[in-house]
Length: 355
Image (cartoon, rainbow, N blue to C red):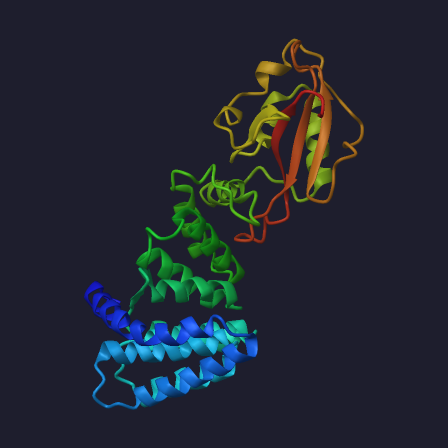
């Protein structure tokens, strides 16, 4: 609500509270059954007051709100829903109808009826101007709930965009761009997904933010956005083909081929303790610097920790200080281009023995 409206309501509530205090101070000392009976008696009195056609807006708000609060205290969600929806239907010009429908949606959620709650949250957004309740935007509350209970990516895309555009200071923009990108992926809208990933990467905390359920968000975004602007000509259709080509190049001390096989996006060389997105792990170098004058060897088979999406080839002899390198092969995840999605790439080097 606007601040002036809130002030008027507070004044009205102060006067109205004098009436309520005498009732509820007595109710608080009674047993459960007695409290229920007292609240029901109060409800009847409030409904009689509500029939007064001369009530001003503030007093009417206070009475409707108290009736609704009492119903919620009694856990009578069905009664609460019937009262509030009936009130909104009979009083379409009530400036607080968005609030009454918000309470209705909340009642349905408490009843486990999320699809009906979603209808009311969405109805508020489409048909009612925003209000502030206790300093919080009703539209913002609706969007937060809709993101949690909506079942379709298309709906969540709309709600994420609304939150970003309307309430940028109330949310983590960084997380929302990532969440938005994931929803576009589900809809196979790859151009929009890449735009959202790019916006995610442009945020100052993109590399450090911890996002629940998405531990590799930054890594994935870097790979997808990097792939989108690259030639993508270093991948192999299968892991055996990649493994064979790399082994042949090592046998022949063919550093030019090894440089060609290295991924041209986010290729890393680092210790096992580092993160591959660490800027220090992304330095460009040529295999020529490590092959001349050294006796490089590789294991006949891939490491036992290899699996269907990642593989490691143990090699030795690259340098005096760190002779053991594990060449890291990875399956490509790039649905935008089916012809390379699922191919394999040489993505990096882990230096030293495995930890």
